[in-house]
Image (cartoon, rainbow, N blue to C red; front, side, top):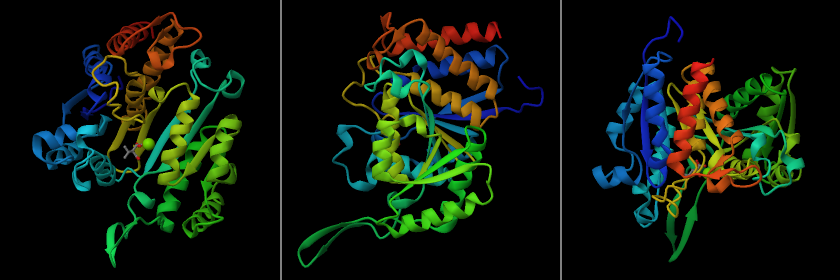
Length: 368
Ligand code: IPM
Ligand code: MG
């Protein structure tokens, strides 16, 4: 622990579906870090998503927002489920996700897609295409078509029309580009900006601003790619990418694709930063089809906690210990069913995988 460290507070929002299950190991890990003197931490639980609607009538209750404002970071599981699919748009669990991202001003969503070497046989892609893969998707998270106005469903002369608007302002593009270039500086110094500038004016501006921000980062290489081509290149030759920066909708789609390269969407963590309080969540959803069956992969959740230590608490050391623990457990051959493949010695459930990482973390901390 650093001597000058002050007490940090984390808000835990397990949410719906597999959310609470993959959250299982989190509490034990936090308790151990505090007890063993590795961190000064406190945490509290909150409600978000369908469970929040069930209990309070709101998917994002005001109390959760107030709690988030009092914390240094928010760790979120997943929201949503079939039970809530027929709710009116404003009551849907997904609204809570967009609401909290917007409230926290978390405009930069970092989705690192790194292949653990142990999982090169678990991807549906050939090992040579993905070995050593390490790319970062930087997705703009609080703008674009997700938030643009006008939006809605209107009826004109008896015909219904659904409307959404893709819109980006210059400052919005400027700030996400800076995040991408800053990250690239600490990596392989390559930014690929993904847009649809051959069709969309918002993308024309996106490209122009990317170019102008690039002038301040002459040491970083910038290239542009249309989103359709980027989708293809990601499966054709993903190792050409270092940092991929793109808008909200394109980033949503491309980050799922990038996740699959690493073996399973159950492996990918994300950090949403840029505001006062960072938000950390696995990129997978609530997976209602497998909820409650003790088969979900908790590693994306654990790796999200690692990102929380890295980006919100300035504890690169703890982030590294967690990542090493995950790596060691994979090395030992433990796999949840989504990442089974070559090198699997034992298929374990959510709970057992969480326990293995926890025990490994204890060892890593003792031997450091
Ligand atoms: C994600 C998810 C969300 C999104 C949904 C659940 C609203 O797909 O975090 O990628 O589209 O942002
Ligand atoms: Mg998504």
